[in-house]
Length: 124
Image (cartoon, rainbow, N blue to C red; front, side, top):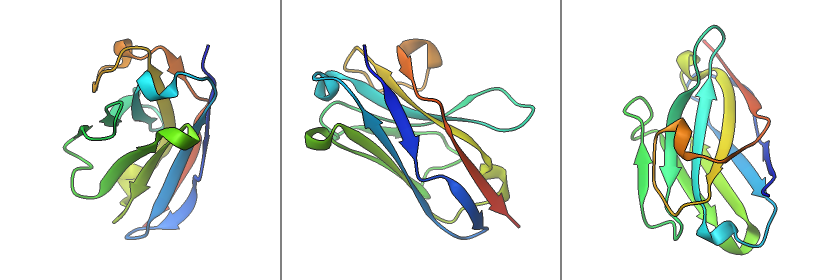
């Protein structure tokens, strides 16, 4: 069992930056594919970014490419999402997810564990 706890959300003006963190429990974190998803009010949850087990492979939704960077530190059992040039449309609850398989995927169904989410609000 893996527990995921997100942090780093908050209120920021458009054009600003935030760095989200996700702390994972468990001794096998380095074998998990990790991802970030988000859910805006009234919308379905959507993929943001994913990273492979070594951190060498990353995959982004087109809406965040060039602005967001996903990274991980296996020694700290943590994954991060650096968000720059934030836009009001980035406002959402951001979720960290872990897959037991060593994948890089944008599909929710590929992930086995989810955090509770952290709110990101971007004002105009």
